[in-house]
Amino acid sequence: MRRVHRPALPDTAQSYLDRRRPATTAANVEGAWKTARQTQSMRTVLGVLQKMAGARERCMYCVDSHGSDIEHFRPKSAYPMHAFVWSNMLLCCAECGRFKGDRFPLSPTGQPSLVDPSAEDPWDHLDFDPDTGNLTARYNIASGTPSAKGECTVQVLQLDRREAMAEGYRRTFLRLAACVRHALSADAIDAESLTATLLQADDHGLMAWCFGPVSARLQPFMDLRRKAPDVWKACKTAAAQWRAQD
Ligand SMILES: [Zn+2]
Image (tube, rainbow, N blue to C red; front, side):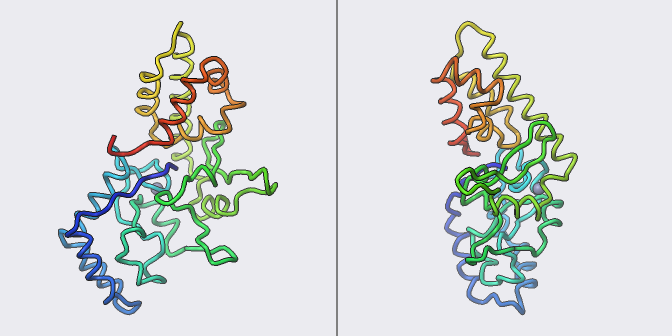
């Protein structure tokens, strides 16, 4: 999963959402949404979400499949007042849409228990297993327990049991590792060229994971950190600043 950055909508599309919001209730939300999806304003909204997701328009949850439709982070059935709220909309693939459905678990304090990739860095809650390609909950050293939000997100979206997705993540990881190994074999490493190559190869948002805390113990990222700390830092910064529009 990767952090995505949400721009403001064009005025006409935002005004359309503002007009639809007050009149939307539990009783009419399904029909209202179906009608709205035929409008130019909602096609504009979908277009902005596709741009946010990057050139390949990947699903914002699994980042593996094509994001085909507008997903409501808070399900519109239970939260009709959020059906036309821009910050509640993500781009999602059919499979993630099926797994999530109307699920929206809350923490004991009433906060969402799912990662919202447009509001937070998913890697604060998720971890990656390079051997299997699965996503798992991130272990929180301070509390000595896995992230509750990470566990819930993995469980709801089944991020630890999707073979094709895991294979996609594993291939991307191997590509990123190969880029770093290749750079390390040169006499001097060009930071700009390496970060550009890595960003190009990073189909799954794994760069932020590879250059996170794990790089202190995982090869070849460990070697890069030790031998060329400035280049390592440039890669880490580029990963954190990823924007689809770049
Ligand atoms: Zn998906």
